[in-house]
Amino acid sequence: MMKEMICILCPVGCHLSIDVENDYKVTGNSCPRGGVYGREELIAPKRVVTSTIRVLGGIHNMVPVKTDKSIPKELMFECMEILKDVKVKSPMNVGDIVVENILNTGSNIVITRDI
Image (tube, rainbow, N blue to C red):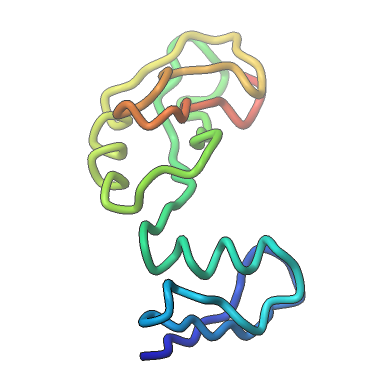
């Protein structure tokens, strides 16, 4: 069985064909990253989570955050549930870690704007 998808890792947008019955062999990719993406997307999809958290003592009430690495897609809602209760005190800088190793994924939640 063949699965079709478009690679989203760069602007080229390669049309990938993944042979599920042949150890998820990927064709149609222009670079090695597309092959890894196509295989991973079918076996264990991952996503970068972006959100906002509350700020105490700053000019702004909220600050944007994201995971510094992709996490398993099935953990996204659990990650968001944790983030709704996270609060930080101003000042903080881009890249500062707010939550380390969220859900034991090896990914940290980091600030994406100076506050």
